[in-house]
Length: 303
Length: 336
Image (cartoon, rainbow over all chains, first blue to last red; front, side, top):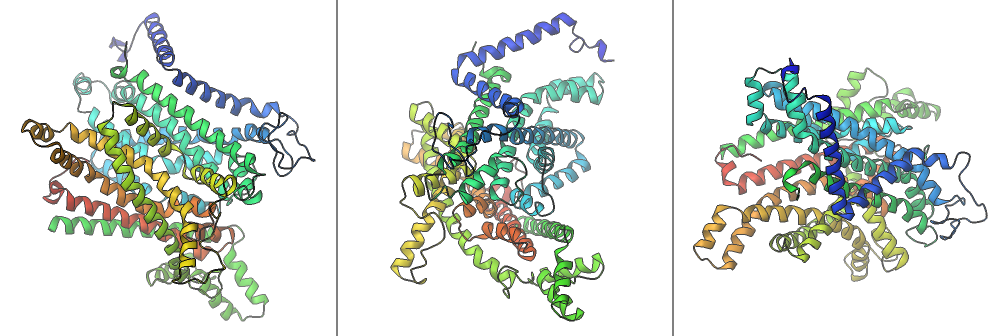
């Protein structure tokens, strides 16, 4: 059926051209404001660090038993921790857990949120009210206290588990937003036209509804990454989870409650390094979201 | 009035369901904790020479249900205890009722949260109006950007940065606790001064963390109202700018009151990081301490209280909306 639709069955080369134009557009948007370029570079650098970071330290982290809580120096740009381990190495190797969790959470949040929101908004009626009741309930239960309570029976030892739990707890907001978008989009002319043409529901959802929501969903995904990073670093920082993995939150906990970074200056670099990493990641993602806003929203584009 | 009553009834019913859900979660978790603390406690009491009957009762006092018996029986016991406000006894402070421990802690959460939130609400709303009016200028830009940055930074990062700045680098503020122990608690200047000194950092963090949100919300609200027809009409009639400004402010602040009510509820749970960092003995710190000390009766109670705060805030927010917005009052559906 869909082969008969000219908008769907573009000949191969036309599609390739469209794609090239898209990337050219991305490049233009990035080039116009240097801050966005910086954002993209920051995000890419973090991704690189998460994937390849641990490979720089294959055997053991650089450690200096004679320099506990050493101040920043050339050998240790962010000083050392309580047993003389290089703080920068800790941040780099710790990024894998943090970023992988963020990614897993974001994917689950988006898939569940979009799926449930689309279904509720498109079907309406009884399914809609049942699903939205559940969503409202989920949104009412406070997330962080629930995670803390859950931590008594679940130790979140791997990044995958942590991402799974955060994702399962986090889809409520996206579901609500996608539902309201669906409700307004389905009354628009182009959807009505598609329905009038007798196109299948899968076609309408996959080819008409989803593409118009894609930018919104993509931005939510990036925001979900930051949310997941904050949540898990916070959980480890509070110290209710066993310190199995190397993680920024564990560093913060040891710096504040072990090293007394809030009373003596010695452990201060140890505290500030993971904080700086979180702030940089936030900054990068905020700047990229700003750029995406313009890439996907033609009205904001100044030619 | 009937509309309001009907809405309130619906809210209360839903709130009750939520309480049931949350307590069931607590019950299931307490039952499934590895190492079964309930059975362990029971065995230990038997070992100490208690008779099985006594040991059973002593354990029930702690956890709100008997260590032996069917799951369903335990669940019913736990729930009936709950509805008579009997949450068992706290393990951390032997002999103290969980409810008493919780109310003592609530005091330390509510006061700083209230002061911090109201402070940031007042300042944030004023700055938001300013940012909206000057939105094409440099200063408006700076306000909006600083707002989004503060809004984006997680609370604990802000708390740690402020803590590092004011207790380590420039040590002018105490790093934790509620007051110096050398002062006699009571109504004397030394003690109150010490209280204020210790509350400064928590309050400042609450205020700064929520301030960004207020600026952004008020700015967008004012911008929306500025585009409304009645403002244009007022301008065309040649009304004084001061009066027009009052029109704008009154209409723009309406939706913010609902957010204010909601955020007060959320802050009960959100205070966890700040209380942990500044060692402030509120509800959040209580929740963490109960988990690390395996005091599960207290944990269930704290979790319940935090959720109830949010439910009540939701109801208040909706009622507030009903009272201020005449369209809702008359039963008209309003797209929100």
